[in-house]
Length: 176
Image 1 (tube, helix red, strand yellow):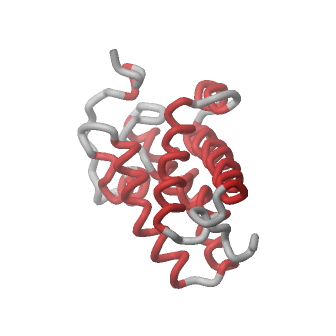
Image 2 (image 1 turned 60 degrees about the horizontal axis):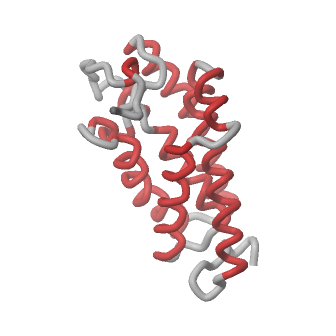
Image 3 (image 1 turned 45 degrees about the vertical axis):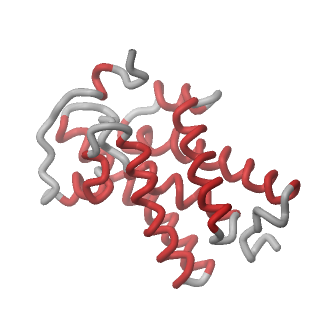
């Protein structure tokens, strides 16, 4: 039994030369035959590290915001072109979700692993109201919204980990 609804498992031809598909499919990472959301999140890690290690914190926040705005457009446009709402290969929402999750954490190995795992956990399990958003909010905003809320849940748990195990999980500099 698959956790992915049938309409999201439809095989479609995706032309990555189309900017909407290229972005929505996470530079091609969403084409992974198994667990595209996990591969999309994994592909977001280098983008996160590049941004957090080279930009000021306000600039990093601007990148996060831009990833959300561009994601609403790209995911919506890609879904319309494919004729499938939130196709499982559309993974830009995972990119934006990981970037948002990591706003509260320093770029350490423990934080990146914990942020990745927590984000994927909340994105897959979809506790209330994430599942409601996933089922009831449509278009590009709907594709992005459930992952952004999963990111907020993951970020909150990262903060909890930072409080209980400060030697392992360091807060972002702006929280310290």
